[in-house]
Amino acid sequence: QVHLQESGPGLVRPSETLSLSCSVSGGSVSTNYWSWVRQPPGKGLEWLGYIYHTGNTNYNPSLKSRLTISIDTSKNHFSLNLTSATAADTALYFCARGGDLKVTSRLFDSWGQGTLVTVSS
Amino acid sequence: DIQMTQSPSTLSASIGDTVTITCRASQSITKWLAWYQQKPGRAPNLLIYMASSLQSGVPSRFSGSGSGTEFTLTISALQPDDFATYYCQQYASDAGTFGQGTKVEIK
Image 1 (spheres, rainbow over the protein chains, first blue to last red):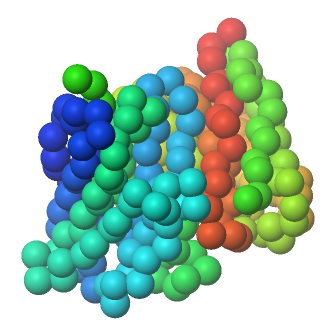
Image 2 (tube, chains in turn cyan, green; image 1 turned 45 degrees about the vertical axis):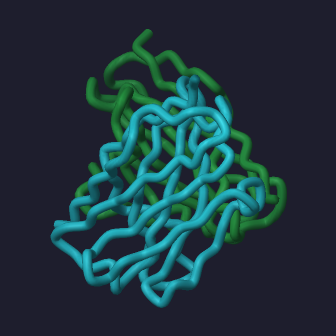
């Protein structure tokens, strides 16, 4: 059974870059689509973007100018970089596995436990 | 972007009740709809995909229906473990938008 684990700083200063990594075990990042989803405290879920092992990415238009998702197949992990962080980026960040076809790329059957990132000075 | 609207926002029910949650899409998504259950501080858990297909390991008291723009999630014979927040999600378009959630609480 695939297991996903997020890691990264819990506190980011405003205007700095929010960087997270998702380590995958029990499965390979060379199959399926891999996404980041976030949830501000007390609010709903927002899909941020996905990556495929070929490096093909797709981002939520609302974040496209600030977001980069990358993948390292040799280390079996993928990462998120969100530039110019503001308080509005404070959220629980999840990494998630999508399907292995583009049509199911945003259908998430496995999730990490989530990591809380606070943007504050 | 396709907008997803759930109703109600909160639902109070008792053990053994049958409850129904509705999700409406701002445009047709055929059957590209999923339902997730989320408990506080935990990751969402996939319950239903393709509007009505039950994810492996999910109890059969969960069922989904609908197509186009209107969908429902039904939980039959509510169990204590079912009190949680439920989200619909469309995966027909790039943004993969979620509904705002429906909290099922104990009456």
